[in-house]
Image (cartoon, rainbow, N blue to C red; front, side, top):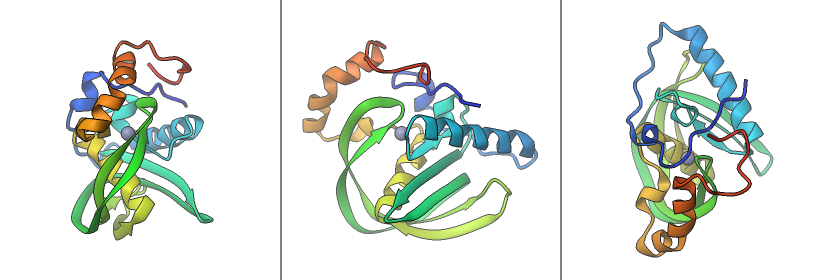
Length: 177
Ligand code: ZN
C-alpha cells in the first residue's frame, strides 16, 4: 500500500524515531513492504519510516549503481564508524520534493542493523551507498539535509523551501501530504 509522504515543515521530521520492538514483527514487515512500494512509486532511492508518518528506527534503500542492485531494509541501525575523506555531493529528499542541495559527509561508514527477518548485519559502505544510508539515518535522528546546508546553498534554496513550508509547490501529487 502506498502511504503519503510527509513534507518539510511537518514537526514529525524533527523527532528522534524510537527503537523498533521485535515483538511487532507482522506490523514491521507490512510497514517495510509499504515503504518500498511508496519509495519506488515516488522514484526515490531511500525512505525512512518517519517520512510516512511512523517515527520508528527503520529505513529502506533501493538503488542501482553500475548494474548492482542495492536493496535493503534497515531496522534499529547504528553507525559504528565513519571513515575516509569528507566529500561534498548533491542530495535530494522525498520530503523536500523537487530540490537538491550539496551536503558534506564522510566517504564511508560501518553500520550494524537488523533486516525485516530480524537477521543481524554489520557491514562497511562507501560512496553512493554510504551517502544514501547517512541521509536516511539522519531522518531517524530528526535531521533533514537542508538543516545543514552551507550559507550559500541555504540562501539559494530559501525561496523554494518556503513554498514547501507553505504547501504551495507545483507538481506534487497525491503521494505527498
Ligand atoms: Zn530524506
